[in-house]
Amino acid sequence: MKEKEKSSAYTNIESEFVEAEGFKWSDLINKEDWLAIWIGFIVIAIGAFAVITGAFDFSAAKFSTWGNGTSIFEQLNSEFALKLIRTFVVLAVLFTAGAVLKGQGIKNYLPAFAVLFVLAIIVRFISAQYTMNRYLEWAFWALIVGLLISNTVGVPKWLKPAVQTEYYIKAGLVIMGFSVLFSNIVSFGLYGLGIAWVVTPIVIIFMWYFGTKILKIKNEPLVITLSAATSVCGTSAAIAVGAASKAKKTDLSLAVSISIIFTVLMMVFEPIIIRAVGLGELMGGALIGGTIDSTGAVTVAGTVLGETAQTTAVLVKSIQNILIGFIAFAVAVFFTSRSKKGTADSKVTAAEIWYRLPKFILGFFAASLIASFIILPLTSSDTVSSINSVLDQYKNWAFVLAFTSIGLETNFKEIKEQFSGGKQITLYVVGQLFNIVLTFLAVYILLSGRFFPLPNLSV
Image 1 (cartoon, one colour):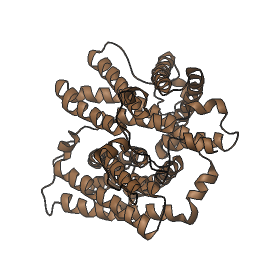
Image 2 (cartoon, rainbow, N blue to C red; image 1 turned 45 degrees about the vertical axis):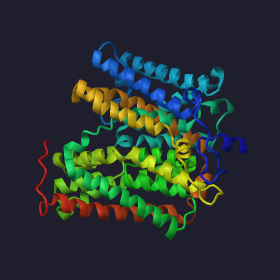
Image 3 (cartoon, helix red, strand yellow; image 1 turned 90 degrees about the vertical axis):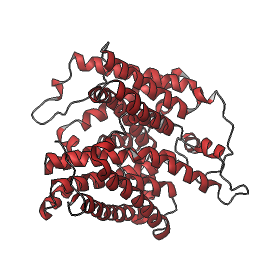
Image 4 (tube, rainbow, N blue to C red; image 1 turned 120 degrees about the horizontal axis):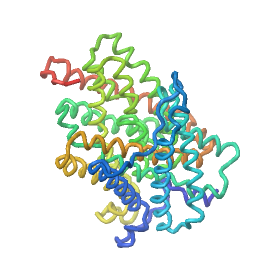
């Protein structure tokens, strides 16, 4: 058990402080954060080249929704098989190369990765089913599949070399950075900024204070991870902030589980309530975009109200998603400061921040800047959209591998201990209610037409 805890990617921020080390060029090819950046950049580069030149197809396998009058066997054709093989080869080559550079043996890692990939296929298959796809995210099913194995037959020793949660998460987030275009801000201007960028930091600060001072939750990484999941965009924000705060795998699993449960409830009932009180599509869509955690759930809930609501909801959520990298960076700096507090040398230097900073955040920002200020000006928005369609699936596969790994590393006893006293549920509910009230006030001020002219949205 001690060996497992030591090797886990997620370690408690309260662990013994390690002094900063000077930068070494070898870090660029043997440290996980940097390897995740290179993996993400390679996928982005190949995907962009394939789309721009049209030289070859680089798209990854994607299960289309099945079960609503369609059979899963309708999509299991030679083209799908080719994409599935391509997806496995690309990810296996990149992640195995990184594992070797980190010091792992290829004979141990590659077979284990192949089995983990098969588990990821099962997750994608289940989450593509019509009912499952409509109400529950893939992250939930990835956790369930992993948890079922770890809490029944157990995780075999030969599979453990591929169970590397943070490795896959970081690479996926770098790929995700390409889709976070700064041009999204222009689409909704100051309206979206006022709703997403003003409210979100206030909610995070409120939940942090409420969780640590009022509820007195001692697990600070869990508090900040759950706060980010509540105020930004659920799973993606929890992943980034969990890594930045060095939360345990059980903290991330718990935060995502709570977020998913309440996302489903809000996705179903929030549009009903909005319609009942007559809030209208513009304001209702903005409220949905600012309060429902998952981007997918935001789209579904906005669609229930109408096209304008869907457009507004997605714009608000997209602008809000841009904050992920900034928040993760701020959290990394904040937790670095707290880890030094009370020591003989309590001053946090730039070198210390650099040492503690999750380097994948730099990759996330770099990918976003490349997409926004290089690829977009040189091509077109349609081309960038096509590139993102390709990259999105590779990102999703990386995240499925990560969340399946979380499940494989987690047991119900650990999660049960995390739920002791119900404080985490209280933190989420109170924080989300505060989020809804504050977002509504921002929406009313900006989009009611009483104080500012209404934006002209094309739908």
